[in-house]
Length: 411
Image (cartoon, rainbow, N blue to C red; front, side):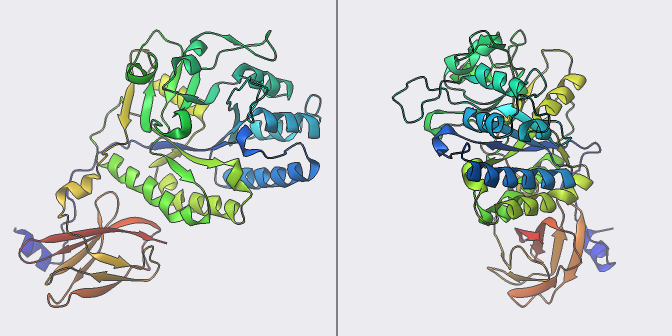
C-alpha cells in the first residue's frame, strides 16, 4: 500500500527514524554555587535569614518533585552556617539538615586566593571547606569537587591523591568526583556529557586514564538559570537534548549526564524560586516517562560504576554540533509558529504554499495530531490544547514532497 493510500485511509506515517527499544535517560541534577566574589554578607543576621529562607524554599521545591540538588558552598556560606546556627553542636543546622534530606547533597566549591591584599582573599582551599563541612556535622567524607579549572593541571591533578588544607594543614581530602570544568574568566569552559578519568589538563583532559583516581562527570550543555525569563529556554534546551538521545542507537557504554546551574547571586531576585519550580514542573512529564532521571553527583557516580566496574570503561560526547535526529530528515525550510509556547490555538505561517497535511510529532517521532488542509492558504490554525506539556515538532507536507518543520512548546 502506498503512502498516499495510507493517508487516504486516515493513517498518518509519522516515524522518520527507528526509535531505540531500550531507553537511555538523561541523568540530571540542579546545581548551585556561591562565590566569594559575590560579596554577600551571609554572616549578617538579616542576610542569613533571607538566604536561609530562599534555600529552604528551593529545597522544598526539589523535595516535592523528587528532583536532586547539589548545593556547592564556599567558605563564607559554610562559616555563616556554623556561626549563625551553632553548627558545631547543632544537628539541625541548615547545611546538615539539607544534606540529610533525600534530595540535596552539599559539596564544597572553592576559589582559593591566599593573597591577603586581594579583594577575593580566601585562605580556605578545598580540603579546608571539606573540613568545615565535617565540623558542621555533615557525613565524612565529602565526595565531590564542585568546580575546577580544566586548563590548569595544578588546580585539580594534585587531588588524584589526598591534599592538605591551607588553613587546616592536618586535614587531608581526596574527592572521588570532579565536576564543572571551568576556565579562567569562564572564557573556555568545557561543556559535554559523560564519565571518564582525565589524564591531565588541556588536551590531556579528554584522555581517559584508568589508573587515575578522579572521575569527571559531565555537566551537559550549559543550562544556566539567571532570572525569571529562562523557564522556556531551559526546558527547550533540555527537551531538545532528550529528543536527540531518544534517536540514538542504544549503547550500554553511554551515560548522558547534565546539570541545571543556578548561582546564589541570583537566587534572591524576585520570582527566582517560582522560576525553578516552573522548570521542575515543565520537566516532570519527561521524568514520569523515564527520559529524565534525577540523581545527585554521588548517585551518578554510583550508577556508572555499578554498571561499569571495569575502570577502562568510559564515555563522553561534546555539546558542540550536537544535531537533533528528527531535523536530519526534514527540510531546513522553517514555518513561523506562534504563540510559542502555545496552550490553545497554534498559528502556522508558511513561506510557500500549498501544503496538504500538517503533522504534530512528539520527541519520540510519534504522530500525535494530524490535520488535512486545503492546499491553498499560507497560514493555518491548529488546536493543540489537548496535547500534554512538552516539546513538539510541526511538520507540514506539500504534494511535491516539500516538508517544513518547526519546534514549539506546549504549555
